[in-house]
Length: 234
Image (cartoon, rainbow, N blue to C red):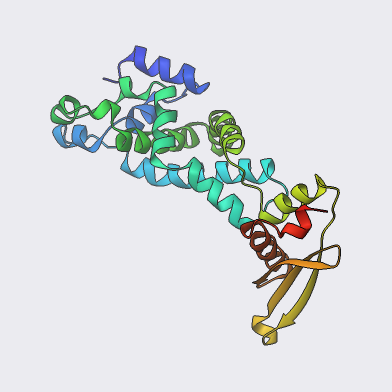
């Protein structure tokens, strides 16, 4: 119930000691508790701030960890790192459940282990750190918590763009690839068409708003078709 021992345990897991513990207490206060205790603030406002701070921290982490990936790939990875299940898992690793302040009914209903509540509390705690010690401390705590999660996700699933994967596949067979481009459409809305070529033979094509996007689409087309038999037989 947000007693001193549970607060201390959460701080230890966070690796951050609050100068003003009331920030952490607020971050652990669910609306059901606030409703039963007039004049008590819930974590809703903190959640609003924490969502933005968390998003920035994870975006920076991904940007550094994936230097060669396009925006679309990084966006997909970010979505995997800020979903409710991941946020709840982080909350459990921080020992948040024991410190939550819940209304009687919510507590009896198992709210301390409810993903939605734990995920909201995670965002609120990030905000509490930012308010207590500044954004840099919040970014650091998020980095430490999410760095291994990002590594696991990248190991579990190949998030490289199609062009990188195709190049590696062909290189393993002693082949190299080049792209031929054509530009169409008006100047303000150009459309590029890319053709992936190996040993003078086209193996895929695609379109995009830039040469890079078109090349990625052409590579994806080549991979989707499984690469022509004459390529694999070289």
